[in-house]
Amino acid sequence: MSNLIKLKIEAFSDAVCTQSLGKSIDAFLNPDSYSLNYAVNYESSKEKQNNAGTQIFTGMGPTGLELELTLDGTGIIPLPSGYATVDDYIRSLKDIIYNYQGTYHRPNYCKVAWNNLQFTGVCSSFTIKYSMFQPDGTPIRASVKLSFKENIDFKTKLRMAQSSSPDLTHVRTVRSGDTLPLMTWRIYGDSSHYPMVAKANNLSRLDAIKPGDELYFPPLNRK
Image (cartoon, rainbow, N blue to C red; front, side):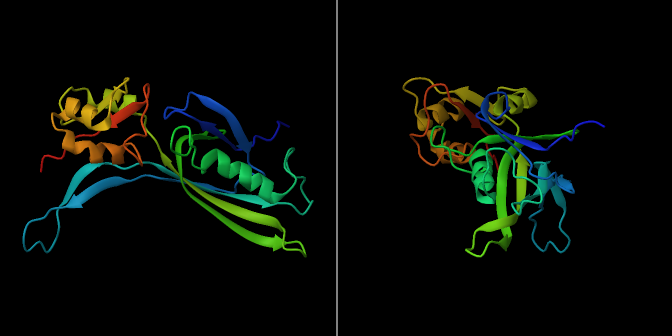
């Protein structure tokens, strides 16, 4: 009989998931099931007296992954090595997939691997339900619902765009002395678009960039 393959979640510092942070966690118990969600984005036409909207294609939506992990600290199944309690395991899991990382101003990118499942993306939702406790209130059983969104790195988006037009996607590396408004002006000829660029790159502050960072410059909306 072959060894049981455990679902593994690993943390990465880059969007393409090649730079491992050396932090990973195996599922305590493999999930009974998981869901992959696919989306196509449309918007309704905006003509007046529109009683039956025409759906206009705007792009493919991100693929989503949903799964639930069960944790049991009753002793029926030994806790994995290195974890004394259910909460120890949950803290480690949160640090890998959910917690804000100050060195690069965002949570980690993640890879979820389990046999044929190979999913790279970011955690969009983390829900814990405790269901059994010791007399002092210490939780000994819990379930964790996880939702991930697929993440496509900026260089891949640039290859998909296949154009140097300002109406399409650009990726630029931050150089010494660069500011977000200055880089925005270089791409679009108008620095006023920098809030859009900041939002696209999940930047909470204008100074949250440093030399070597790669920034995504999305297509301009010409409506």
